[in-house]
Length: 328
Image (cartoon, rainbow, N blue to C red; front, side, top):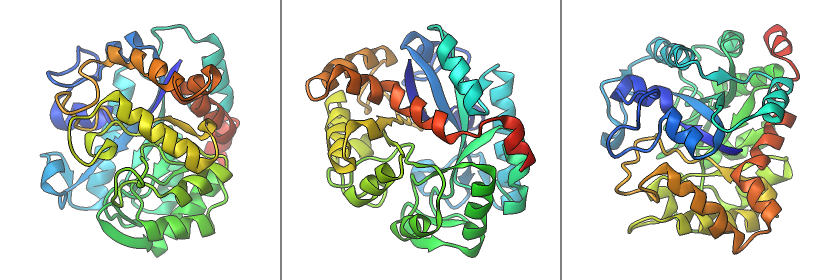
């Protein structure tokens, strides 16, 4: 089973009209059938909402001006996933049963919020976990909770409250998009499960969107996983991207984190990547990645990067039951 820890399916369907149940939209790769045909069995399906102040590259008609509008938009995405019949995994026992009985062609998801503004106050977190939310990245750009990409700064007072609420609810913390200061402050405060859903090596591609070797090492020390993004500007500074660039980041992140058991995939392939510029023209090309990884890693290590590393992490990190998450 291949696991992809970051796909913006709901946002793209609602904001851009790229539905999940039909064939992939022209020049895009992701649909339910494309994922299952490629052997993907588990994803992190995001609740992404675009702020009205977003830079030109991410502007859309589907934007929020305030936290209540963000809330309405993210709830719409939850409802979209349900309307697609996407199996939402809520706890570790459900995950273990799904993996044990999985057959090619089946697809399940863990809900991940990218940018926490839809959570109007930390006291609302219980309503979100009741809806199935299990992973939160507090930032995208700057949010009310954290500094983010292109917006330096630390955790706000509200952000500290959110992390405390997340710990009580056993929600996983995603560091992707958090500004360096916010990451450092999160490391000081956070004692729960931690991951980077889609963050590449800054040593290869400079810039605050990528993670440092030190951050990779600390996430690994805490038992977390680093998901490799396939987004072109995350893979290389310029030029046509290829799967070899994914391998290059896998090698660097494995080296920085102490081993490939801390590396996985977080492709972001439905995050606005036109296939003319990404590392693949068709999702079927994903089958070539294990062969390329095998030149540098053992067969078991490649299997881990392609999926079992994420499965192990989520099995350890999700609540033991959805009832536990709802009642805390």
